[in-house]
Length: 277
Image (cartoon, rainbow, N blue to C red; front, side):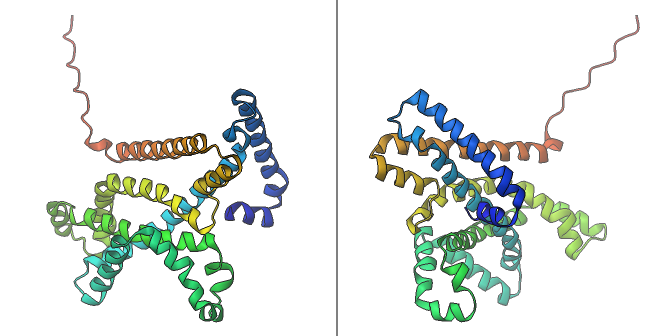
């Protein structure tokens, strides 16, 4: 867990207070599960490991989503540009990462970077980045989600009603002001349902990073199975964890969508005034 390691190494309060409290709470829950499910339960005996794996999964997901969303906007604008020097490189990038399997992309970055270790070491990118599975996984997921998010944003921008754009131009808006006040806010509302699917897809796709030795939720499940041989129990619990978190993501986006679209919701008709007695 890169974030926990960073906090433990540089924040004394986290190292002395927060982390021991989290470990104690996790151990208490694990003890309770063991008393309920029995000492033979692999899930109960290794619950704290599942919690750490789930944290790694969420940490990778959030990091990749934040960076990817920041990068997706300029890529989408480049894709919509009339300048071929901007449009075609953006199209090639999006076509490659949307048209190839994510697992192959992870292998290409993690294993393929070793072929250029000397050059990467000269540039200062080997030690601490391409040598570490965690950063290779985040880097690959960022590139992948940027391509998908850019396509979603591009579709949202193209589906902004032309009449609203023309009305804004008639009011004197143009260029960055038009994008900032009219096009991008409207495109965000249009693209939100599709982007929620991309968030869930990326969250579930993080299970692939376990193949490059990362102990995410899937990686922990594989290790626990290797120790206990309780395959059905462990994979069933892992499936429920992914299902619960995916449902939570959909619920959060549904709330956000409802909040952004509340001006379009039908309001109850006003009650007619009572006649004076």
